[in-house]
Length: 203
Image (cartoon, one colour):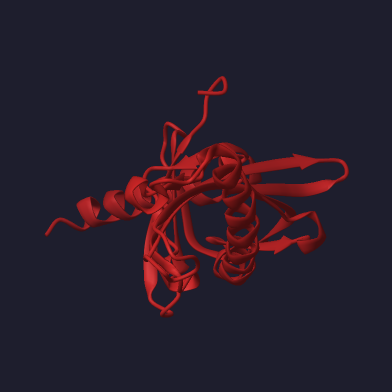
């Protein structure tokens, strides 16, 4: 093979790497995951649980900031927490800082005192057949109690899962700066690829 071709290929790869990973501003901005990740291993009472994550990286005179937020949806097994099946929607958010580790990794340090998890009572959905005969006041009381139970469970799950986002490995941003990719560890310690898209004008 022509050595000139090999040299040009190496230069092209190096140029891509520089565009992807060097320069702190490459990943600064807001990103939303292309697909949700499973949280089921972190919420034993859930028959399914997913998290759609967003990251907001900032840089300024006061330091490098990051805000991680998540939209969480979970379904319970009948009788796992309460004697009925229930679907829950929640939001979570936590602030922190970021620093570089080598050329391709980012270290995120989260301020756990800023962690906020909210379960919207309006998003609590019960299986219809399990509520047959229940009056509205009883349902309202059940909704508030269930929201409180799940808020505690989801907060524990989020606290436990944040350690997996403390190190983002092989961080790359495409040339158009519209796609962010990196690797994290899942609950089993295996590498999983994360793909995120830049949020433009609040979209």
